[in-house]
Length: 138
Image (cartoon, rainbow, N blue to C red; front, side, top):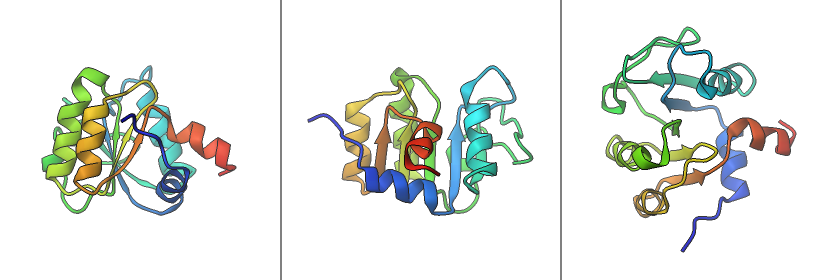
């Protein structure tokens, strides 16, 4: 069964202050994660936690190389990785006790989304927080 995004979950995730681990966020200004994470941080008031292979600090936030290295609770794991790799990130999100996973625009893995949902996480897939915020008038 194909995942269908719940508009109420999207609204709650975007309007409730939380800690967003942004996987794939580095200092490369050409990557969409840079602008989206800045929007989350500055416009929506979310705390961002960069997670990338290099562990770059971004937008004044300390970076990490793995979700397991992030201290404290994670509310949302925002996935800027390709569909072929996102399943492993979703499994890590489940393992660290994240409350939600957000698979970015173009990132689709039905099996991973189902694993997350079965583990009790909220799941948003194949859309962008900036797009959803604009549609909600945020």
